[in-house]
Image (cartoon, rainbow over the protein chains, first blue to last red):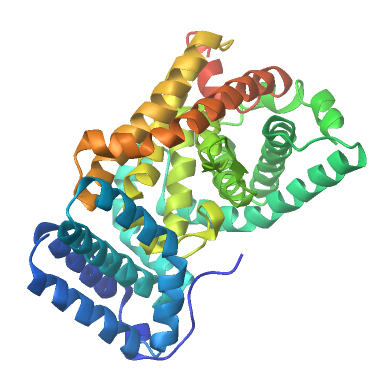
Length: 202
Length: 212
């Protein structure tokens, strides 16, 4: 599982995670509040372009992102053309695209591990509140790393199941595939929990 | 491998979960992580094209199952874990999409609605043990469809500048797929409850609260 992050050493890459997140959040919020204000849109688009240049990812990355978003463009355009005027559609399209591109810039320029450790720091003062749900910031981090580790495990379960189905000439209906996947995954969860308990993790 | 697991299950984990008070937290975390990963994997499997060309992914089937199998708290927690990792930049949503951008577009509300959705599915499905078919069906319909749409449609309407009715109209094409996934989720939940009842702790504790 490859993170969407692209390594780099630009100013944007070195910016603190929280500040970067806050900036994008405020940009998205102002785009949503001043929906029909062309100047706000212009500023946000300028910061999108500046961001992609500053990040050292260049116009290639911007074009690649736009290509990834081709279905979103369709989703944003078609209903607008049915229900709204072309001008309103154009506004919606440019606004949502700018916000999504900004958000993508955050993802491209921030290492997954940095976001996760930032998240743990954010949760640590909440430990007393989390304890009421039987949680703690440590347990949440454990859950996050277990999830990352489990994705390839479950993918390997899936290919095992598909092989067995192919050997028997079975059709891969959702029911016939998901049921064994569920049992294998839950059993694996049980084994993982036992292994963790045996190592003294509580 | 499937048959073997069916034979071994009934005795071991189900009866053991209560006395090991402290380790049950680790077990819950492990189950939530596994379900978060399962929902992610279900989103990567090839989409099934439905009549009319609307492709459906099995990701929301995973959301319904998370609530129905793990119960409200752990079910919603599994989806929350998944979303945290998506925000952190892993491509775990359907067809390899992910990153913060996944929560900035018009369908952000649907993905966020999975958390309360899984909660409601679990709350209604696991309100008794043994599971009742009518409870599972209402729970999955209410949580897996109604709650998710109630979160998703306003966001979509706002982002696209449409009215709620227009947004609903746009999403009608997905309802048949959701209905099929509900049916699959209900049958899977009931087969699983018979074959491997260990994870249904929320419902099983509901049955005899006084005896513990």
